Image (cartoon, rainbow over all chains, first blue to last red; front, side, top):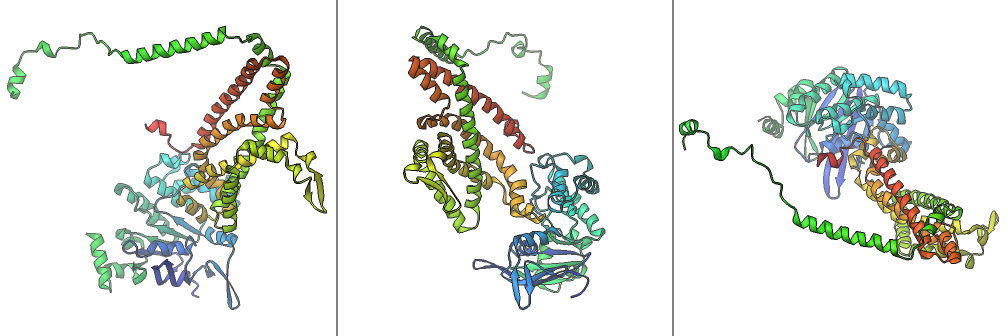
Length: 256
Length: 290
């Protein structure tokens, strides 16, 4: 496998009962790349993200992150389902930012960030706090370290959530519609943080409706519909000169 | 009326009311109700003062060693039985929501059986266990005579704790269900395993929902321990009874016991307030938003 490919998904299929949420979806994301996934609701974008960090189990297909098969261990001609402990270990390297933030409400901004490093990675508290402070500084919330999520705006909560994901020193961060639950005037502060993160070389897979962000920041854009990849390619090409008529139609509808 | 005429009109005394005296509305109904209730209350106080209660007995026995020892045993039983109830409650609730069909069926069966019989009956069952199992233990490893093990204390802890566990598990389960699924997912994505997720993320949030009903149950347990008097456990009511069997001052000693129950429950209610405040951290209080 190519040294520079960090995430490789091949023919990922997922059914909910008789509904096919993902239909043989393949995706490649290179290290340091920002990959945006766009498409209408119910197209399977979020499900694909959730398969990458095993919040959902795929029915067939395979995903590799850093050349490591996700969810299975290969032993000769057998594929073994890995243990819960192994799943937890694989997830440590894959950050996730949710549409609804999902900060821990009983912990302050700083405590939210150090929870994983201290409890899961076993990092000394002092070191974790220093790093968390630096991360809060980076997302522009140094003065909110001791605030509880309920005392923060949606945009601030999402920035803390991004800092929490970064606190685990992930290889990759998945963003599941990170600005969809925000008031319109708070969207840009979150996108700014994501842009800064992309510039620093973080590998990101972003499910979004923000085509402006996709155009300016993403390297590649994938358009999905009804569980299938319709079109994928360089961001500039897919967004400006889409090959598929359906992609063009979607882009036009979202923009107007 | 047009604007010009309004501006030129002389000040009308009809609209000058700032200097008038304000007469508050009279709540006649409220005053009558309060009067009636006060009258009834005064009657109750009088009844107790002229009734055949020897208040000197109440005073003398309030701090009698046997009563204080009984109080200690009541508190000990409350802590032991409620502790067992909470541990069982958490375990059973987690078994019930686990994906394992055997564990969840056993949890459902446990709740069914132990909620289905009166606590008093369960106490008597444990206390009389020797009638069907003369010895307890694992054959070949260790063995005890049941009558030696099943003291009134042990029988009461088991009877009260195990039946309490069935109720508390439902409280714990409602607490676990109250935590948003996004919290479970967020905990998983930072690499937490099941047990750490429950301990660090889910249970602390569930506590906010669980504390008021568990507080209720603790207060209930303080009084439920009086059932142990039936199997000769020396809690406060049992000791009060022993005293009044001897001196026939029944009501005086029941009042002594009531005083201590009320005091313990009052202290617990205050404690509950602080525990709720601790687990409510980070959440906006309902009261402040109303």
